[in-house]
Image (cartoon, rainbow, N blue to C red):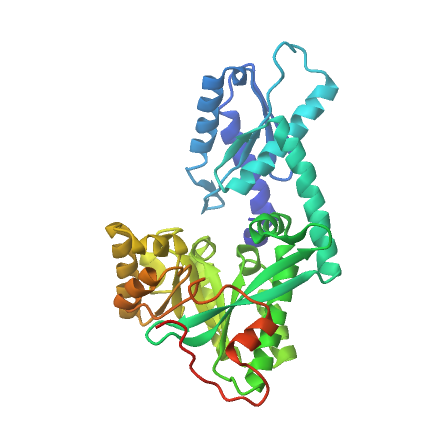
Length: 399
């Protein structure tokens, strides 16, 4: 809010939030502002689990109504962390109060990981989780400095003839002691800490550099898909960072496809439309990733200057079963894309049955372990015969 409307509006919003929260208090309860946009309740009714849950829902419900500040309607979401006084301890000392606030803050961090509008009640396991998170954050900071991150590339194929179309760049981390660390473990930590922005910039530059090399080896039509995180997409320097990388590497921007999740795009649809137009003006291609799993964006979809939709693997997984609902979902996405002039990419193709279904639906492209897992650049070059002075060819991978 401060960045969009200025600090004066932000201060007025904080006053409005405090007034709305104060209205929820009983006579023996208290509200404190801890600083920034964080507030703290001291509630006696929290000792009763039923009353506590009712209180939490009351607070969350109160934020569904927009705040009116300086003739602007502002919708605000909230995350809550809850810490309880141990049973039998009727008097809260200054030390235990500080510990309670710290525990509530720890629980709030866990709530934020679950998403907006979430709440979490503190337990002792969270303390160990916080220690592990801090250790992981420190390791990630070191990994970026020590160049421990590498990229692997998963091939993407045209489904009508199973010929190679391009690759998706995927981040991998080789920890010096733990070995290969799962992206599912370290990516959320980077998102939460903000480290995803500099690491994402590394991915962008490295993937562009690799693609440019393959283009110079007489494979000029290969396309590289690169993921943009929600934090990157919201970063004020995104356009300048992309311009710098394109100028530095010299890759053809028309062969770069930026993948942005449906949730990130719909976070602020109007801003996203303007930003995607700026990206398209640089001849970059835009794809909506994980389509069908986020917000209901059909009403906005025709307004976004995007080139393709990527069907989430959860729908693809069900195509080999008798789950008619998921089949119709995929069919609807493909039909809608055709009407809008968009291409469709399916991810997570693992069986011949899934591939056959997608081909029947006339899905344009796909990727998955049926074709190939993500591989290091050297393995990609060996697998597909990409080398200096070779001519590009179409290599069927499935009969």
